[in-house]
Image 1 (tube, rainbow, N blue to C red):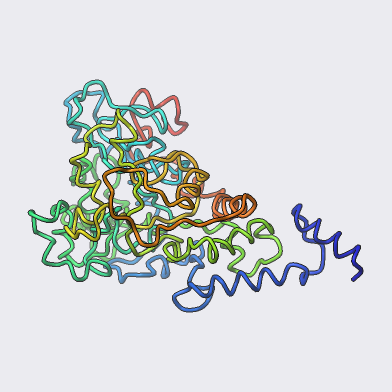
Image 2 (image 1 turned 135 degrees about the vertical axis):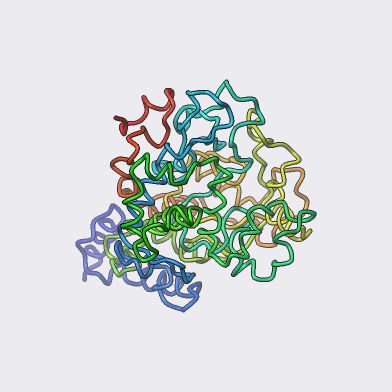
Length: 457
């Protein structure tokens, strides 16, 4: 190939065409594959490849489940996740507060299953996404509001122990914490961790407790009144016809959890690259960014799980929710959630250390970090590259939180990979139900939310 043709092919590759000989870009592909494999737990790209849609047997990669995952359970769980008829125990006894919230109130698909607002408010909230605020009928102590921004539920099947502190589920990271599960002196999460003794995985354990935490009504009356009884009997026929009423907490959890375990960002370009599409899946700039991610930038040292999250906890010194958002409710400097993993274990070495979150579809987030202290991926990357704490209450930082020097071009490539290479454009549509059985508006059913929704009768 002449020098002129070589230059022409390089130009075409940069601007997004791939009509030149494959070997023109093969060296960077080989280099990237080797870099990814160096962080893979099994030494292959397969470690990072998500299950195909409908590959139900692989929807639980880290756990043996007490139920089988299939399409019927997933579709049932999808409706329940958005079902506002569950919200039948609001803190304020007003008609306008009844059946107005759902699981999806705080995990909206279009915001990558995060709140779409700095603070999540279920019961006691009105409005949709970025326009969700406290209901004026509630005082500041009454809403079901979280003192840390909820984590995304994308690719959550790879999360062994859930929440920022990793408290749910008795296996993996919590296998050696059994003495803490009911310790009310050290452990601030005892209502949840006491359930770890039941032996269920983290997702299923958390969803059992979510019925009480989030003021849901799930019982025989709910099932019968809203048309879910026969659907449950069909979806869980292996457990018998009365399973949902006799074992309501587990039934609720297993249905919701089956749905959550089906949410994968399969259509992200990086997934297509991992499957062998080296020519068209990622742009050259995104490949350069991926090389930085798995190399010089050091991201994969912590973000090394299949979902590009991690199984470790790190203190990065970011602000807590009450510090960044003065109007936040039910949180303060005394909130144990500010302590990170140490709020569970009491270990000084884990003070203000939070779990490494997954990275797919993060460009849809409104805010970032546990305290919603950043508002764009650019800010997140710049904060991590500078490695300078912003929270004066955090004195002990992670040993992995060290400055990294990148050129403007490298920073841009890294951002491009995370923002676009890890983005599934079909995620929201394919994981939102067409309707819920109650006929209520969803994911919220208050008068301020309804104008923002198209899913109302």
